[in-house]
Length: 144
Ligand SMILES: [Zn+2]
Ligand SMILES: [Zn+2]
Image (tube, rainbow, N blue to C red; front, side, top):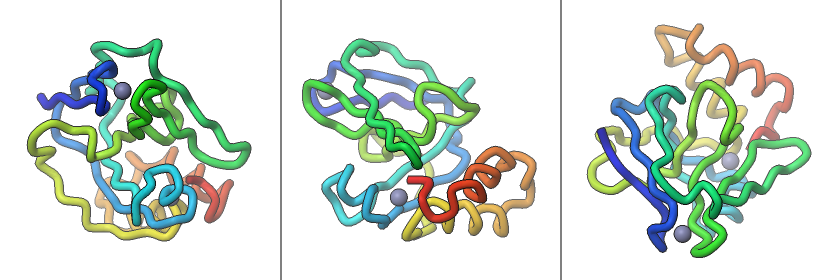
């Protein structure tokens, strides 16, 4: 079990380890959203995730053709991606985790579709990634 939250402390959550995977994304959307060279995100199955506080503080930016970006409306911390709060996975910005997330992101992608393709090739259990791969194909190169 690991906990995390935003900078102001209004949003708190916990997740049961392990994370499914983690990556750096250097696409322009992830750079702008994070304010950094890359957004670093780790994913857990949604049943391994629980929001403890701050639901009312979370705002969601939803591009027409890409993944959502959920952030704290008080302090601006980038918190969650993908399809927050829906979907079978919760994509958590790794920088919001308190302590050691016990995963070291290795993949560097320019966009999430490329990331998904690499995950597919690397995975021994591709069925687990079925939803993500489908989304990647539909929105090739523009999933972020
Ligand atoms: Zn906050
Ligand atoms: Zn991206």
